[in-house]
Image (cartoon, rainbow, N blue to C red; front, side, top):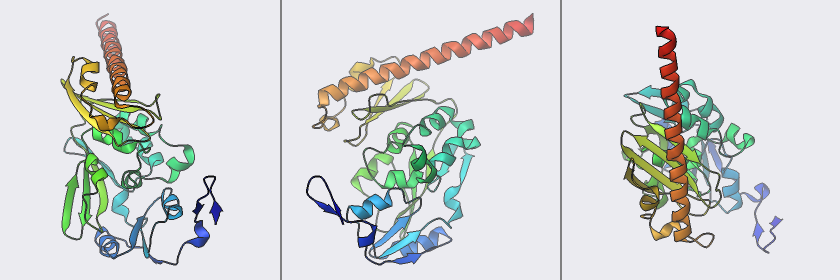
Length: 285
């Protein structure tokens, strides 16, 4: 047993009750086993050990490492499809991800630490439902959809819905779909963690801002390009605040981070236009 500073006693791996281990090779087989009472899915397991210490009840562990389809990354129908079993290290370096959304790949590579990135997966990051994990902030801003396989059939959810736990028992997250990646500008700002983290996606003249923190679930606002960032951030709900930072202060931070990211976009576009002009001059010379 491990004695915590606050006087509580937390279990260690030695106190985990025995459980059955299943290693399916297909999504259908995994969901069949995962629908049993007390079943727990496992992939990278970087968060699973913490859940065991927190008292997770597990009668059977459904290991997903042999379900190859969960490691798939493809560009399809103008979007990006990322398997739930893709590890952070692999995803941020994948040529398809870098080709479709290089700014998202770069942001992905900045979360957690090297040890975690080697093992933790997209699916585990999302399904752990921990506010300090960052993938839900990025995917919510990008308008991603989460695809599940359930005992009743396929299910599609918005990342924001995860916090309300709408999926049925045994549901397995199989894929994350980011739509319409062509022409998307994506920015990520985490310099104010743990108080605030912001992700921004710009598609045409529409801007999506998602703000989260280590203590509160992410919230999203949408605005037109050119709209005042502070005014847009002011529409965030009161639930954006908590004991660590009030709602008014978090709204202020969100406006500052949004303006910073949009300014970065303007600077990038100006640099690209200048380089394009210089290239044309060289060709005509």
